[in-house]
Length: 465
Image (tube, rainbow, N blue to C red):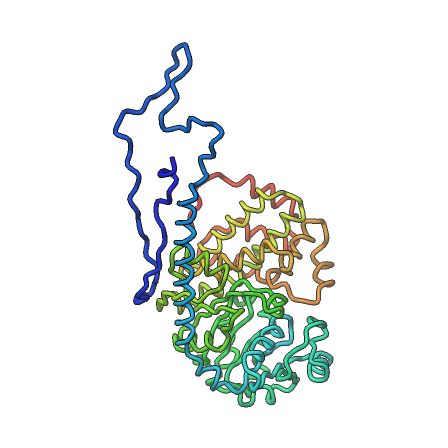
């Protein structure tokens, strides 16, 4: 019995670490099948004969391994972990830091919660670096400069001394090496057109904004160069499961960067990565065991960087935009108390719809199943810190959309993105029932209860994009 309970395969580290994936799969000898015939109980009268493969002693726990096997298992796990840690330290010691050393100034456009959190993060990377926030609210500007707090979003989190704020675009942008764009999508075009004359043509823009422009259906990778009238403006999309509050508290977080410029993506990775923030430049291709350890302990694992995944700006942006719409749907399910079964079914369907549209637009399926896709979707749909989900919860509880939005001091991008998503779905001929239902609710053409009934009445057919 114990032999049958041994693992069919185990993960082992490759001690040479010469390959991109340091893990190999080892198949130990499988237990031999008994050569004698299996005795099968018949339906005749009398006591059935027990099968010889079943345990005869009911008091014995069939899942309990012998002490020797337990010690062997623990030894294998300990050795594998020690090798992983040594390799991780070796990898980190060789990691380049020249980008951080060369960077003198970073500008952050926007004084919202995520822009503030990223400003604090970058400032903590290097005390000598100047981090300038361009904000429109004079009160927030004074709060940051005089007290080192953003009183509106983080009144209890002191900002680093090297973070300053200004309302003057020329002052903020002068001499900047990198620009973090944290202005909501719907306001980005007018904002960027207003500061375009002060933007250096070679200044890399790292977009933190997620969503689609309602009237034009444009993504940030299209909005930024067009608003600045510079089609060659360097652009990087930064996305992934990340709440501003947890980033401010320096809790372990993982995100993804994507850019058409491979070198630029790696430079941003060097600029932002630290002990509590992992920045990946592609989808991960490692074994299940390594992935589990990586997610738990954020050890540096080598990643398979492919040009397709690294440059999948479309996949990263579409996933980041559509997950906000799906989060509203998830909130509606919770607000209506429809249960966990409904929640799981809805999110699974929504993930499929996002993948269908993204791939039709040229995105990579691996991107949608990675951090910027599934990772961000899980965080936004299942955690109540999500402002888009909170909108859905209140809608499902019976509140009116207008009242909900007027009571919020932050922008829920999913509300305005919903209509743009449906326009894209029609353009690319993709059926998206869940996200379409959200758009109709946003337009007050459908109640949450009616939407649920209609979705449950859809034909039960195999769904294809």
